[in-house]
Image (cartoon, rainbow, N blue to C red):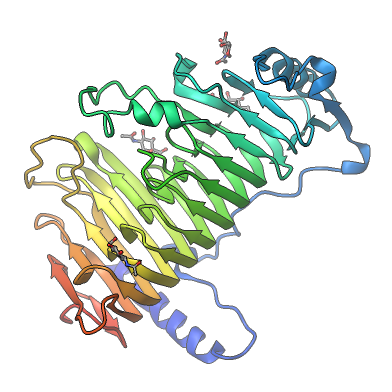
Length: 430
Ligand SMILES: *[C@@H]1O[C@H](CO)[C@@H](O)[C@H](O)[C@H]1NC(C)=O
Ligand SMILES: *[C@@H]1O[C@H](CO)[C@@H](O)[C@H](O)[C@H]1NC(C)=O
Ligand SMILES: *[C@@H]1O[C@H](CO)[C@@H](O)[C@H](O)[C@H]1NC(C)=O
Ligand SMILES: *[C@@H]1O[C@H](CO)[C@@H](O)[C@H](O)[C@H]1NC(C)=O
């Protein structure tokens, strides 16, 4: 009860704050900082890392890297890494510009003795063949603190051969052999910045932040063809205090996907499409217990995506997805602009309704405008056993992409307190 009251008070304060701020140059904090205690949390994101003036620079060419289009540069990169990682002072690894270095796979492992950075000016590319990659992680950074990865260069998964052989494309291929690797993984990293890089044509998922804390990912261009299978743009799992900013994502699966164990996630100023939109989930697969909370998605332009902002959970799961805010989202010809799907099922499973589900609660949709490619612009398909609680639509204006068509909201199993302010289409108010 107390949580519910707190939530309403918070919403009220936000509405008050935002309306009093309207047109003036003042900012208001958002719901993700409304914890139960009401204490403001500190902003997510890393602290400054480097004193560049004292930094040692290691060029991978000095460790034997060859941009000759055929050498595997694993050893050279690894030697540069080991030296940097073992240095007492802050060290930068440089991948020079206008060159392309092929690597079969790389695992950069910490902990390191000092802060470390990698300036990728050139291109790091995978070989265009299928081969076994340890743990299905093509480039991986693991157990590292205080790291910067940047440089304006390109990480190219060369994924074409993997896509063609994916079970989603080649129907004779069994689907359990999910052999394609993730292109770039950060695992168990703390105080990490990844910025100003192009990620193209990943074999499968493009970037994965897993078990990390204090992360800022910004100015990324993440691109793969619309038809490339399972190429999620930025995937966030069990990661806390992460900001994803000022990036462009055009890909074959979710632009951003946020799954179990992620908390304090801010996604700001993103261009998305083609792709499957921004997803929270899927959660609760195979009766698992999943938690995500305090997620703010703000300032997104979506074009031609199959979903806009989506929360997807499986029947039979447990856990909670709560305190989620979608604000300032522009939709152009999006097939399912606003969707909560508690009956998510993407395999040939028998996905029947079950007694439990992940609880979805405290979700605000604010300032969302644009066009829907389908008739159902808003779809809240919640569980009977665990109805969605405290959904709020504020200033949501969605119309049909086709002139003369109408759009509707589908609303099922909403618990009390669905608020609607100035929104069309909308759910019946309770
Ligand atoms: C890193 O990759 C090398 C080469 O594939 C492998 O021998 C080593 O075990 C890997 N280390 C870790 C920590 O994954
Ligand atoms: C995570 O990384 C730190 C070093 O930054 C290391 O000490 C710790 O053991 C790692 N945790 C796990 C679970 O591997
Ligand atoms: C979900 O994430 C939490 C927090 O990181 C973790 O402890 C738990 O094991 C995860 N649950 C599953 C089913 O993976
Ligand atoms: C809108 O999206 C639909 C479905 O994805 C597509 O068939 C149609 O060509 C798109 N229209 C425009 C104007 O982009």
